[in-house]
Amino acid sequence: MTLTVRKVLRRSRGFVGRSIWVMVAIVLVQLTASVAFYSAIDRQTLREDHARRIAELLVVGERVARLAQADFDHVMSSHYLEAEVAVLPPEGPPTSRDQTAEADAIADYVQRWEPALAGRSLRVWSESRPDGGRDLVGVMGLKDGRWLTFRSRNFPRPWPIALRAVATTLVFSLACVALGAYALRQLGAPLRRLTEASRHVGESPPSPILVEGPNDIVELGRAFNDMQRRIAGLIEDQAKAMEALSHDLRTPLARLTLASDYIEPDDIRALVADNTHELDAMLRSLADWLRAQHSASTAELVDLPSLIQGVVARWPDKVRYEGDKTLEVTTHRGPLEQALIRLIDNAVRFGGQAKVRLVEGAEGPVIEVLDQGPGLTDEAMARIYEPFFRGDAARARDTGGFGLGIPTAERLIKRFGGKLVIGNREGGGVSARIWPPLPSPLS
Image (cartoon, rainbow, N blue to C red; front, side):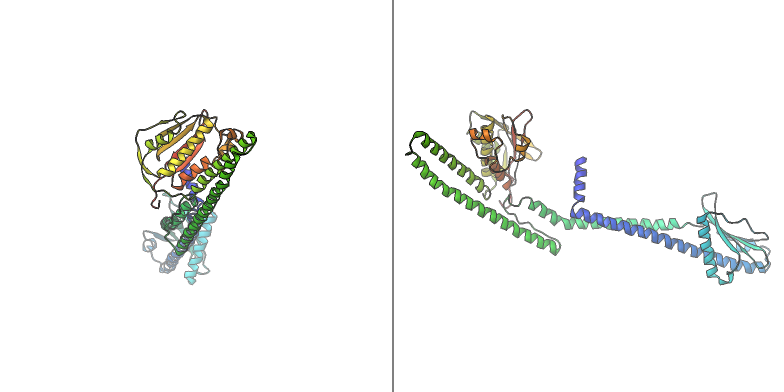
């Protein structure tokens, strides 16, 4: 659950996520403005409708009252509107500010619609009904001194109409947000592919990506593919140049090795010979690391137990294998084998003995190389993939190695789509877990 929330939060901080939030904010502002607009229009419309109805009632009522109509209430009343003529005025309106303001506005509209009523003593107010509704009540003085009272039943409030309009707007806005979010997700797909491809620039063979969408994104994708090719070319040229240089340096080293046989005394001869051999081994290791940056490989069907056992056989008394007898997968045999050789050699150097296990993981088969050493400090573990770094410099001088075994193994594994994770084991020792390189359409 926490991981899902983290993913949602991380996506909400991206370009598409922020665009969706901006769109939601715009919709909320538009919805708020619509609520205010609908409320004002609704209130205005209701006032004018009631004012028109009451104005007509008052004009007609006054004329009927002049004719001394005996059955005034029956003639002037209807299902929604009742009127009567009284000698004494009814009780005054309530003191509620909201009701008074609303009633005053309607009374003002009445006199606008019927100028003949201007100057008359007209009071309008609202009264609550027992069933929860409201009636609009009013009284106007007639010229003969009597009072014409009226009651408009079920005086509607403005909000129900406004709420219906707001609900319609909200549904439409949510539909627009959903459609916009879907469109943004589709537009953001090329950017996500670019992001994913950029994580592997320089680590794996250049793989041009197909970018679709607006012209700007298409141009960005083309520029990225060009950049990817240039970076791969620069890395390959640099690696080949350094590889050639290390190869050339081995020629004078070979001459020094031959010349060391004629050096006297014996201790000086041994010192020179040992150092030339160490330099030669260092150059070989450096050449392997550089070659891993531009090596090529073709995926093939490989029996993992057979491949592992063939590597383990190099250390018959120090390394043992545990796992299935047969398990065939399509992977890159050469890079996987070279990476295993370096990881097992590193485990034997610093742990004395090692164990190699083949297990089934959630993402496929996993090869584990486990040593029996004391493990590494947090600082050393953080730098374990750095070239020429050795976790214990003093001990490394005794055990040999130049700090290129693990970086070379990592580069070989990652270049073809695999994964290498190194960490300390509970109880001591270091574990190296390999997810074999996967086949690639361009490999």
